[in-house]
Amino acid sequence: MALEIYNTLSRKKEEFVPVHSDRIGLYVCGPTVYGDAHVGHAKAYIMGDIVNRYLRFRYPERKVTYVQNITDVGHMTDNDDVAGEDKLQKQSAKEKKHPMEVAAFYTRRFYEDMSALNVLRADIEPLATGHITEQIELIKKLIEKGFAYEVDGNVYFDVSKDHDYGKLSGRKTEDQEASGRVEARSDKRSPNDFALWKRVDAGHILRWPSPWGDGFPGWHIECSAMSMKYLGETIDIHGGGLENQFPHHECEIAQSESVTGKPFVKYWMHNNMVTTGGVKMGKSLGNSAMLRDLFKEYDPLSLRFTLLQSHYRGTTEFTTEAISASETGYKYLLRSYHKLKDVVGDAELPEFNSLDTPQNQSIRDIVGLFKEALDDDFNTPGAIAVLFNSLAPMTNNILAAGMSEAGPKYLAVWNALAGNVLGILPTQDATQTDASGTLSSVVQLAVRWRKQARERRDFAMSDTIRKELDEAGIILEDSKEGTTWRMK
Ligand SMILES: [Zn+2]
Image (cartoon, rainbow, N blue to C red):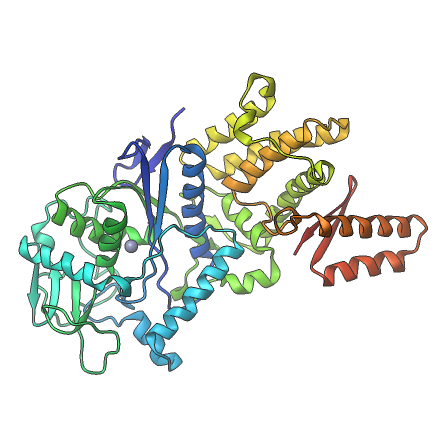
């Protein structure tokens, strides 16, 4: 079995063959930090997270480097880079703060939201403003090679010089007429040319000196400069939202390949959008569900679970009914896992890789099905189905039969597949925060007292125990198999 990835460039699934024998480079376009993250961001970065986690799981012998940038300059309010305004500069005027204050504030909140969703941090998180020199160098090379031109302090990429332009998206121009926008007065040679460097007026805060005068870089050039700096001229996988395919990724290809003469990216991956009532959710559309608001109502991990239940290339219809339905399934899986964890207790777990032996055929079968699903273009709904149809029922059988020697093995499987790869197990579990097991013993004691209280029909005491544990951040969950607990 080989990992197959749907490559937007060829519009088909291709076997994944890394560029280098010892390492894999993954780049996903990061957020523009002028506002809080919404559910569309969650889908994009959970996709990047799954790719990152699965590559590490599947290719343990290779060094995976994940780069995800932070855009803190150059992203215009409009894709029309002539009439638009820098998003950070605009937000800073609104909030009466320095643009870098706005960037720092929303960057912090972005990472808080992502870690609530159990999205692992990238290995390198470069800022656009931290790589102005690299961007200027790249623009200089593009001018030298005749792919770019300067007009009065602005530098543009000359799309007519790049015969490949449009190969990713199948488009060469923005459909200005269809979008109802009128091309503003411009010094570009062609309306299709895009900005590499923008001249600024006296009042503009975000500005750097350059060979073409004071200004700031265009949005697209940062991703070319930073991905090539950290991952080399040809990177394995580049991901991002479908809306970035054009113009952003098309421009990244044009800039990078014009300078190096080599393929920029081997596999392009694009996640589809999150919709509600069939309409795209997004900040500019005003129907966006901000993650911070959703976290007040739903467990962030069950939101992650909901998003993983649709394939990244399909749309995710995001409604309260859909979240509730998947929450029920998620709780069912967690009950099975928590019950097993309670039974295994402090017993030592085997190394996951040591379980790949003929004596553990049923575990091999489950892992095989799980890998088969994710090898098929990161089919997360398929991988979750393996948990529902194979791992959870098997776990429940073991618990019912009291086969204690199988317990630690299966718990190691849960930790590897549901924990390390899918990232859906609670990370604040006692095993990770409570090395000595003290908390676990105390909670077990409280659970026993509560059970005894209920047996003698002292429901007031039983409720008090539950309520006070809840206030201390511990949630009890009752099911017909017994009571399990978890940290909030
Ligand atoms: Zn980008």
